[in-house]
Structures are given as structure tokens and as C-alpha cells.
Image 1 (cartoon, rainbow, N blue to C red):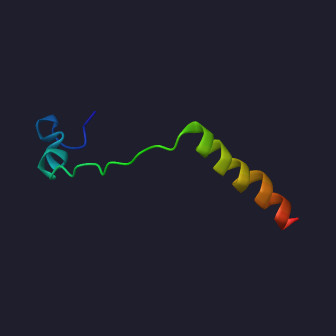
Image 2 (spheres, rainbow, N blue to C red):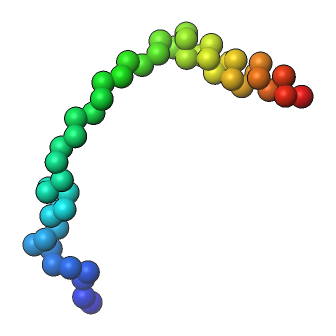
Length: 49
């Protein structure tokens, strides 16, 4: 059974791509996240009906 490409070239493209640093972001506190989810799911759903 043949393989698709040789194993010696495995990971070639990924190793060549430049490393882009992840942009830092701060997570919301659970209280603010829950409040936002509530307004999105419950309150906005009531307005649409």
C-alpha cells in the first residue's frame, strides 16, 4: 500500500511558516459573561416574539 508523499517530508510546510504571536486577550469574569449570555439568549429572544 502506497503512501501519499514520503515521511521524510512530513511537517515541511508547517516548519517553514513564520511564527505569528497570538494577540493577548483578557477573558471576561464569569459574572459578566453570564450576564451577557442572559441578555443575548433570554431578553433578546423575548423581544423577537
